[in-house]
Every structure is written in C-alpha cells, then in structure tokens.
Length: 239
Image 1: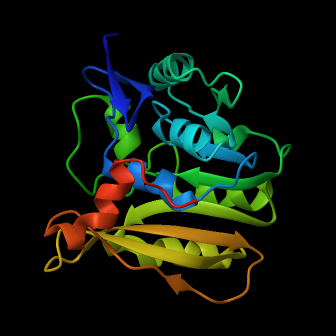
Image 2: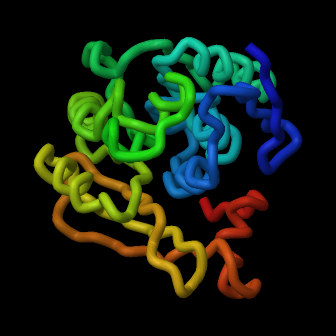
C-alpha cells in the first residue's frame, strides 16, 4: 500500500491516507469533529474511524480521550500511522473490530460516526471494496450504529453523526425508536441558494423531546456568509 500524509489545521496534526483505492475524508469529517464540542477528558468512541481524522481532531483540540474503532485492516493501518505521527498515543486507543461483535463493556460519554449514507446498489460504486465499504452500508448500517450506541452510551450520553440531508428522516426515526432523542441539528449548504447537503445530528440517550436547530453553514458566498465555515477549517473552534 502507498500512503499520502496531510496536515490538518495545525502542523502537528498529520493524517495518513491511502494514495489510491481507499476512502479519503471530506469536509463532513472535519465539521463533524467540530460539531461534537466534546469535553476535556471525556471518553469518546469514534466508530468507523478510517484514517483517524475525527479521532485526532477531537483528541488534539478538545483534549478528549478517544477509542478509534475501524474494521478494515487497510484503513486501520492508516489510523495507526495517524496516531503515531500526531503524537497521540496517550489520547487515542485504536481498535480493529466490528461494532456488531464488540460486547458491552465501556460506557462512553459520546459516540461519533460519519457513517455510510447510501444503501448498497443506490449510488455510483467505486472500483474497489475499501472505498465502497466507506461509501455504502455494506458492513455497517444506521441501525447497527444506533444499536451499538444504545448499549454503549452512559444514560444521557451523546451520539453524533452526519448524514445525507435528503435521507435524514429515516435516520432520525431509527434514533427515536431506540431511545436516542435528537437534541441538536445543523445543516451544511453549498451556498444560500442551495438545498442542504449534509445534516449533523446530536442525539441523547434517554433525552427529552426538544430540538435545537443551529444556524446553517455555507461553503460559498461573501466572507460574512462563510465566516463560520472558514473558522472551522482555520481551527477557530468555540469550546
């Protein structure tokens, strides 16, 4: 396997990615890490960690402790390199496992996941299985994630995930059916004239019915419109 290495926000955050054939993170991963607003020393599980971008940002910027869970061996190797290159061996514990097979043990303060949005056969496929597993719900469905969160979160613990805005109702229904109440929601748009592309969701295990819809993020427009989006990518995170 050949790898590429990318700095993210700060010089001491270095992410390992497969040069060819693997899943390469996008803006949704970085925004989701920001969206968690994880507390210092909180114990967070990053499910489907991939190259470790979300785990690394949460550990480095929010100072949380992260268990990074990745099933695919090729992506797990990237994760191991990312942890070492970013000097986060004391903050991130890598786990090469399938969440459907992990017994109930640790109770987390939060679980974060950038899951596959599409069911297999509903979109354009890649040329290799590594990228397809990241893109489609082949090895992990939304139901799998929610059931894992239900048994692995503390009461009041948070599940954070991003999802295709067009398919959000299905994801929220699965969460509410499993006692994970949606509490916070934020949408990403290309510009002020475009429909929402991605939704970022926070659910609380056993939470009451009350939803905060945050101001949207816009990728394009004048500096006032895109300020929050640009701040996130410049490391200006409100904690």
